[in-house]
Image (cartoon, rainbow, N blue to C red):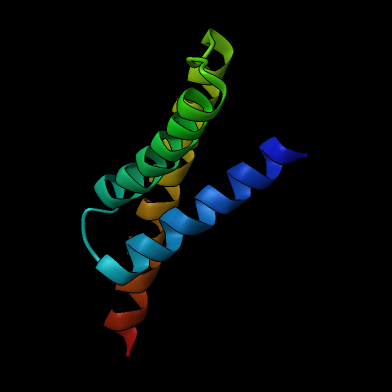
Length: 85
C-alpha cells in the first residue's frame, strides 16, 4: 500500500513540477524523485542508523523514474494547453 501511494504521489509531484516549469520535465521530475529519496535516506540513516538495502535502491530508482515520467507528461500537457489557448 505504501509503495503504491509513493508511486502515485511521486508521479503527481513530477507532473505538477513539470507543468509549472514548462520545460525540461525529465530534469525537474528527476530532481523531485531524488529529493524524495534523499529525505527518506536521511531519515533512515540518521534515525535508524541503516543504509539502503539493494531492494530499497531498486525502489528508489523506480521512484525517480516515475517522477521523471510525470514531469515529462506535465510539460507536454502544460505546453499543449498553452498552445491551444
